[in-house]
Image 1 (tube, rainbow, N blue to C red):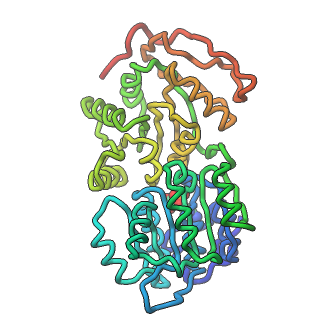
Image 2 (cartoon, helix red, strand yellow; image 1 turned 180 degrees about the vertical axis):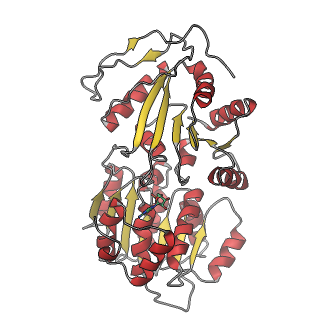
Image 3 (tube, rainbow, N blue to C red; image 1 turned 90 degrees about the vertical axis):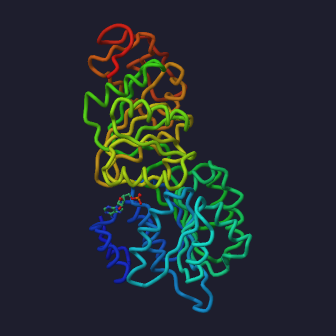
Length: 412
Ligand code: AMP
């Protein structure tokens, strides 16, 4: 393994690395930083938790030069799918920008235009933006992309999922043709390949977690349960073991609120964070979670992509995600750089098919783990032990009587 010095970073950026408290590069940093410093386009397949933010922020800060001091125009643009991610990236970028005194600004939706514009007017070298607000400001001629030297598309797959392809295309069309492009994505599908083929010819590909692969330090299990026993199972699970800092995922915003309410009624401190919450509610919930004032955050897939919180011990998939890629994103929240974590997935009979899709994608059989003493409704469906994570040879599921008693699970 190389050191940060050996990757070719200059002394200013190395100072920032030490300010960030990093002693050695993560694999995605080791793979991305040298070609990025060489000015090459880089496509990195890396999920959250791998250190991808520093993998692009460090070389970007070294590569840009302040071409013009006359106009406050950005030289680097980092586009991310959500406001929360923008806030996290901005934080890292500010630390890295400090030695060189580059100005880092962000433009995101959900907050007033005026203060953002006032900050922009005071100068900007590195702009962190979510696509919607960025396009609004471009259309209003408030932001000029003609001096962009480096463009980063972070969580590109999620931006495509969220329907941000038209703004991304517009941005790609507006920046100088010879600008450097760095694209980071948890999965690289055909859509991303199209973007790369058109806009990033000759890109160096860095593959850390291969497509559909989940991070290694995560212990994954599933808990088969009937749909209407999920709340009881969650309460019993939280009572039986200490899950530490926990993210609970539901399929919809309404279900996130419902789970949050049930936990609250049972005196379990938690908050729900999703797209229907306003910005200050979201910021407060995330702040409480980050500062350990609450241990449990209930959330949905779209929201979760923007959450960067360290030391998440457990991810509970209260609902199986609709797309298997979301599973990889969800559990990527735990087991981050050098840490281990648990990922527990509740699987109701009606979710078996979506659950099997996850096993096919990750090419792994997720072991069944039953909660001792929980009165499982025997109507649940337990995946057969000898099933294979290969679609063609799928083994049918067997019904199994639940252990530990009859009838409904206990409620606390
Ligand atoms: P990211 O994938 O960018 O969200 O980073 C995940 C976490 O890993 C963040 O908390 C970073 O501060 C941390 N991290 C990133 N790079 C390193 C490194 N080289 N050494 C230790 N921690 C790191």
